[in-house]
Length: 167
Ligand SMILES: [Zn+2]
Image 1 (cartoon, rainbow, N blue to C red):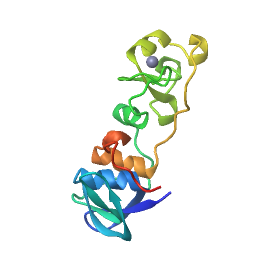
Image 2 (cartoon, rainbow, N blue to C red; image 1 turned 90 degrees about the horizontal axis):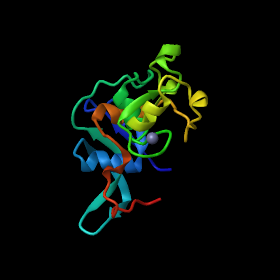
Image 3 (cartoon, rainbow, N blue to C red; image 1 turned 30 degrees about the horizontal axis):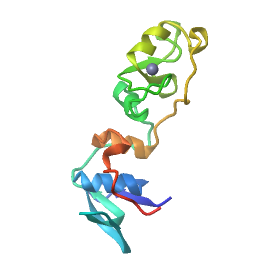
């Protein structure tokens, strides 16, 4: 997969992100293209975008890239793309897999996005006790995910569907 290097506004290298995410950052005017692929362009009906090899953020961001992303409810919802871990519908709450009352913590691996209905149904139980199954295992966000969180990019669907990216 093609990766784009992200520089901070100060030109300090921060992370790499997928081409798709790089284009989102440029289109949302969060970053400018510092270096583009010499031959390739992304073409669509009304827009032509250079394929970015290096982009630079317009505003300086302080992000602890080499550390682990700090846990937050919003971060869990963004990581899980606002999809309920139990039924796949839109999620607005965060569920503790092992409930806090049973010692489960506010950690990336113990929390998932959940719809209010499933969160209420599961209540103060583990998924096994509630007879509920996780559709996917929670994971710790990558440095690139952390960068997008810091920039306020909410999900991967910010690109218009008609904008076809080279593979
Ligand atoms: Zn649900």
